[in-house]
Image (cartoon, rainbow, N blue to C red; front, side):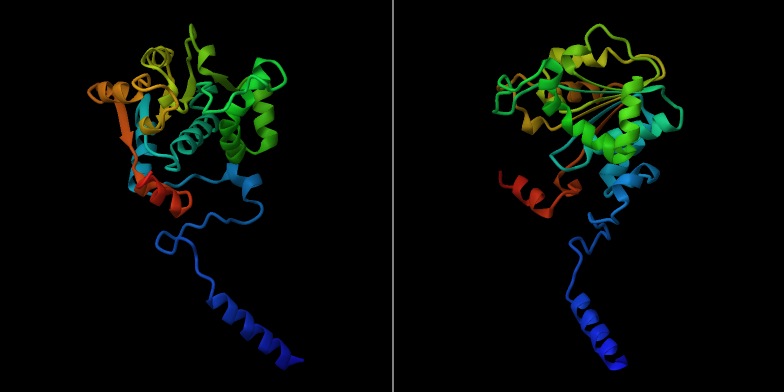
Amino acid sequence: MAKRQTKGSAAAQATDAKVHPLFPSTGWDPLMPEDRRDQSYLRKVKPQSDNQRHLLEAIQSHNLVVALGPAGTGKTYLAISSAVEALESGKVDRIVLSRPAIEAGESIGYLPGDMHEKMAPFLRPLYDALADRLGGKRLRQLMQEGTIEIAPVGFMRGRTLNNAFVVIDEAQNCTYGQIKMLLTRLGWHSTMVLTGDPDQTDLLDNLSGLADIARRLEAVEGIAVVRLTETDIVRHPLVASMLTVL
């Protein structure tokens, strides 16, 4: 019986020796223990690259940050994680998340429900990021209380956001006028982060205002413009490879 256990153990060790991590150079593994999602709100997000670290530092030290970069570089996730940390530490009273309602080649007019239900697919990525940081139960509670608000860009006009952490996601799908309107919503004791990829807009040519806005704001003192690149992508390595040829 003891010999069988020894053989089994040796076989298991031989099998384990053939298993190699997907990202051996970084030590980062996307597969975490099963309780990761439920307990993620207890974990502090750590940057995986120098540019991501620069982004987090910029958010902590500036009231307005523009984060530019391709898909998968963690722009939205890092911004929302910073918003959650600011809320939990008492630095802000609420979180306001917004993104434009732009159809990426598909029409949602046929979807059932009222306008808010039709908007749900557009806002789903924000829900996912929040749930990953807070847990579904706490997220629902904070949204019912109004502490966390998710709204399309069109609902932001005329507001002044004080004591809030504001994240504008997918800003490359906003026109120059829309981004200008959003920037002027910033109130006292608030932080605003705009995220987007100027090369991935769903608007017609020359309608996106993100690249022009970012270029103009770089010259303004007190505003940080952080540019992430393909080397900062934390999704599957093939994403970075594809973006170099597509």
